[in-house]
Amino acid sequence: QKILVAVENPRLEFARVSKKFFFRDFEPGIHPSAVVHPDAKIGRDVYVGPFCSIGRCEIGDRARIHSRVTIYDDVTIGKNCEFKAGAVIGGAGFGFEKNESGDWELFPQIGRVVIGDDVHVGSQSAIDRGALGNTVIHNGVKIDNLVHVAHNVELEKNTVVTAGVTFSGSVRVGKRTWIAPGAVLLNGITIGNDCFIGIGAIVAKNVPDSTRVVPQISNRSSKQEKR
Image 1 (cartoon, helix red, strand yellow):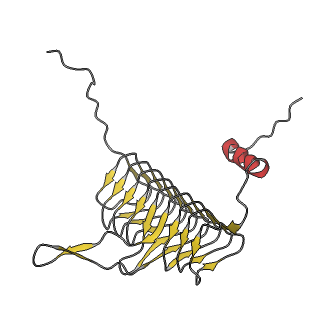
Image 2 (cartoon, helix red, strand yellow):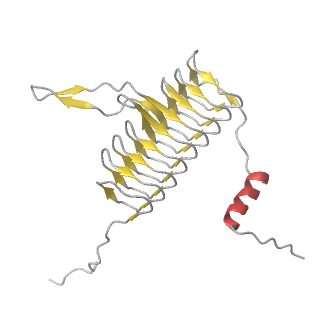
Image 3 (spheres, rainbow, N blue to C red):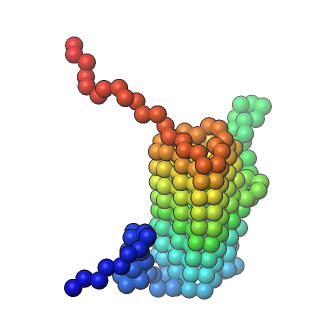
């Protein structure tokens, strides 16, 4: 005999059931090999994995920080966040200015990183601190592996960033936007709410709300020409 349950979103309900009965989370605690600044503020029920480096920062309750994550000074992290192995949060951005002799001088990166609640950051992703202001990741943002978030970027609530995306400096992305793998967003542009940025797109100008940006795919035949 079978019991059938009708639901609007089977995938979502399956995820909830699996998480309830089969998901094994990390036990709270700080691994002995982790290096934590004495002035760091660590919330309740936080897990810090092996070989992490935690600076003078603030980490909210129930954070899960996997192995070899680096969190620099002056980073603020909300509740229920997760950082997968090798993520780097709050490092100096890539800022240089050419001087009178044509040499590159360092532009100091003295801002902060502010991360809201329920944010996920994937393995080997980097979120740079602001040059002067702050880099801001709002509540519910999900960032996949190998993503680069440059200085002064702002990602609004519930935006999803998939693998290999590159944000240049001062990009702003609105709420509930989906950015597909390998997209590149150029300096200073603004992406609206509820947008879709396709795989491999190079976005060089502002995108209004509810817009799809999909790169053109060549229709040329892959057959080799006869010689």
